[in-house]
Length: 169
Image 1 (cartoon, rainbow, N blue to C red):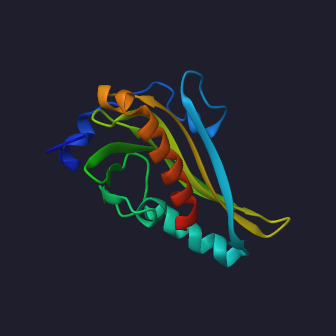
Image 2 (tube, rainbow, N blue to C red):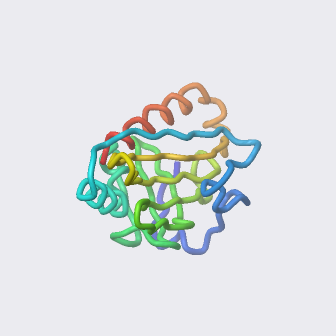
């Protein structure tokens, strides 16, 4: 938990892992991996709508998380505190995807986050099938004594939240 930490306090903190950008390629060893996707519609208009939502923290908010961010739109260097129940998770956007058929962002964990690692939230349009996909990719490991102790619960929460992220857009 990050009690009393303000968004403005995050800029001085370093990420809690070394594999920055690791969700852009093969996921690094030594972490729990998540790679999930779901079809969320068809067509260019659906892709553009979903991409705009994702870039405005829509996967997080739509999944029921509270979002307090330093910018309205996810951009490299933006800081965000994600709240779920009493837990507050500080993160920083480490890269943005802005391609014709794929958009999204990845953020990495900052000190005070229960986990250490990175998570990518993206949408993709497949021109061949016209289908639009929501995608979540992550690598993480426990960063606190209480997340290690509550490992079965934290693993369940991650699975549930991943499904909710995919449905959110």
